[in-house]
Image (tube, rainbow, N blue to C red; front, side, top):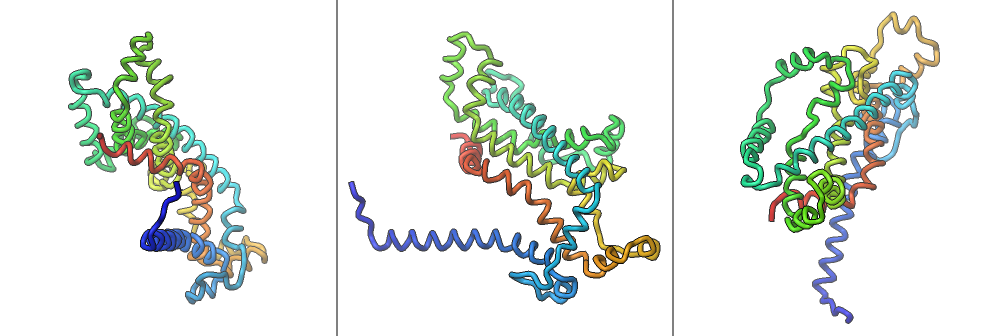
Length: 297
């Protein structure tokens, strides 16, 4: 059957397409602008003449970031943090969300425990008690300090919990009739059904661990322990007589053509590349995971 579409319907489709293209461009323009700033000459950046193409094209900002072994060590720390943190967070969230999705009759302490989680989401113990606690457990300059801090995000827990609530209760009843216990049901039946919301939460978790720099500043006293975001946040264009005395002519020439604006733009662009690579593989689950996990029907 061929649908006879009205003129108004076609006009709406065109308007919707134009609107979405404009929104896409609005999202891409800041990324492009950062790249142009990073590739432009110091004088052009300081004068504010850079917009949609580089002026005085150069790669000095990226050379400064990529020229040190500390940069690659920071990347390894960040990747280690993301991998360990994502694995720990997803395990903790799934094990917490499954029992919390039960009714108060099946899980008597469910409401009290849920209120404790929500309270912890709204209020925290403060920065100083948090730091003292981590120092007491010897988590300073330790990868597990960066992993365990905020390892159970309550918002993501609520998303998974509500997603589980939307699944038919008959699934678990049928599994019990077939002899499956809670662990078998969780890992063999429930987890495959949770793929959309788990993909969404994995994306949230990866971005959260990757973009965080504050915990690295507080919990790392040595540059060797810095994650990438903390490392590049510390990079600034600074000169002093002692540094200049030890610099080669090429290094001094490069430094004279570099400023903090172009270096910061290069930092932002380099830091967003891994997330831009991962996101296309998970975005098809994003809307479904957020929609089904946000409310209980």
